[in-house]
Length: 466
Image 1 (tube, one colour):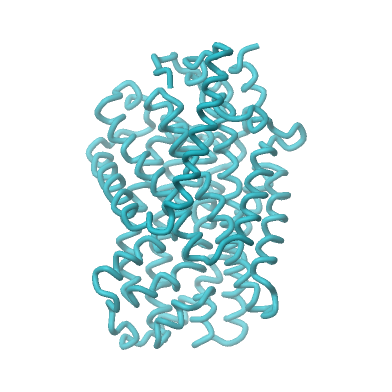
Image 2 (cartoon, rainbow, N blue to C red):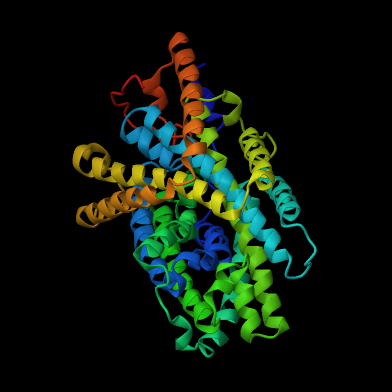
């Protein structure tokens, strides 16, 4: 039996609808930015964080459109791995890009889990954020083990309460803004402004999460681009409005910069105990749901590598009972849990996660330009055609991500470089084993991770030998 036939029995089920995909982007991202980094990022630039949020949002929207377009061509698991490997007809570039991103997902889960513990201190001041974060990871490991239906339902349920908790803060907050609190607007000059861009862009790292789950989204050619672009637009609006409020009501921005739960800190200035509690619950739900989304998406990368025969095959095995890649999930849970105890602070883990994500965002944006101008066969398969717009978003996404990488690499390379070296060794071992077993790489690349061959069976194109 060929590996392609074996994979058909390991494909994923399309159980996530449009609303579930949108909530994955919005709810799965809010915890990273709105409830964790929107305050801490101001340490280098002050209230001008508001402007950084807008500029970062424009870059995020470009990347979301790039991912959304590629998702209509390759609606498979692990998003960026499928896009890069299939567009360039080689598993190696896709593996390198997503091996880096896998590290980012595990670091992001650790950061968000600790953020959850910090918001729990609103109600239980003596709780240890690290232990609380570990407990959250354990619970969500079990929830994700049950499968995509359970995931989608729980995220949808959280969505409404999160919006309510934000409105509780923003509505009254707009009436309590003191314009004097925005002065001085730039506190760290140009260098401080640029330095804030890295942690603030971390606020948008969930924009492509729906793409990672492309093999589980219904009607992907319509729902994936709508979810990524629409979800990102909602995020930009919420971030800008909330940033304007919290920096407008708090007289000293350093209070927010030093807070692990900036929205609750701002709410305490003008809301009563009930309002502060609602915002605190919102912070708990936002960080928890972000951990949930990142965990659900992060397991798709080793699953896809195993599907393509460059990682242990057990990682593409799915649970007979729940249909989830349980080995991939267990690995992410163990490593992310370890990082919650190892991390020396939020800023370091954020830098590692953001650096890894930016590599993937740059690679996918470059791939968009490559497909537009060098792969007309793939371009014809896209769900929509906007070459002028995609040229702009491809350039903005590529240049913007590379520009942020020049800042994000600080403090990350000492971990990133050894990590990539390990990944290349892993890829080399499985590539060599495939050569020895005479694996049909053309047939493998003619499939799409997580998608059965009767749903996705394009004509096999010529491929490189990796």
